Length: 290
Ligand code: ADP
Ligand code: MG
Image 1 (cartoon, rainbow, N blue to C red):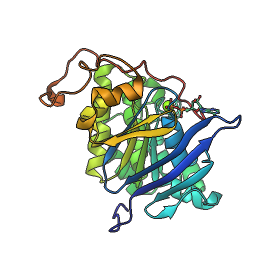
Image 2 (cartoon, protein in one colour; image 1 turned 120 degrees about the horizontal axis):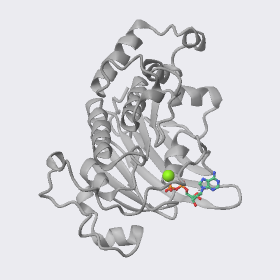
Image 3 (cartoon, protein in one colour; image 1 turned 90 degrees about the horizontal axis):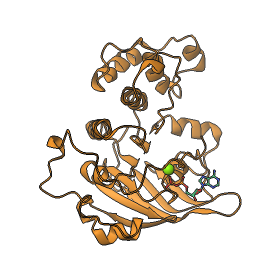
């Protein structure tokens, strides 16, 4: 896993185009390389193509043209069974958590192994003991110790997302795809959840692409920021290089002075805090393919 061979980018996206039926071009030739296990925030206003980009990687949305390579393997041409195998190593974390509500926390976490454990074993709920042990460890790590037998629908939003994070990490992913993980959460919980995702991705050496509408949160958590505007990649750089001019290109005229993270801000000590000024209201239409 993750032993990115020298010179083989972990994720290599070249000239990716997505044209939806009807002719709407959601991606207009996006090129992006991730060569180290870093957190890449994907920002851009609603409709810019963020969800489409993430979903073209694991082909929940089929790209129209272009190339996506993960650890050197071309994903866009895989047949169904090879795609299933590749997907079993791509963890996904969703805005709306996508848990099975009437199953327990433990069952939801273990379902992260569904791509790897035989369906018969899964149906019998007969997961290998090492998977169960790993699930308990992950539940501890995401702050849900002792909650394994609770039904998912008994949890708060933040707790559900913690289950979603544990489920994604159960896959021992080579890549994490994260689509607006905090858009349904309050500002304080959003910060905690983003921090948890970043910590766990760093600890496990997993590169992550995180769609996020909150510029301040993106800057505070990511190693790198890319910005999409109408299907084009218009910025790719360090969080600190996001200037008001760049943000104007992305979101239009606005007073960014309150939003841009100052170097002397200490994100750890920032809580409790007023809700971060948001670039735009949370995108609610980014539910491609749901
Ligand atoms: P974002 O996640 O940045 O809000 P999306 O990737 O969801 O953007 O959408 C990009 C563009 O593609 C938008 O104009 C959206 O309306 C359009 N779009 C998204 N999903 C579909 C679909 N299934 N069919 C047609 N158009 C779509
Ligand atoms: Mg979206």
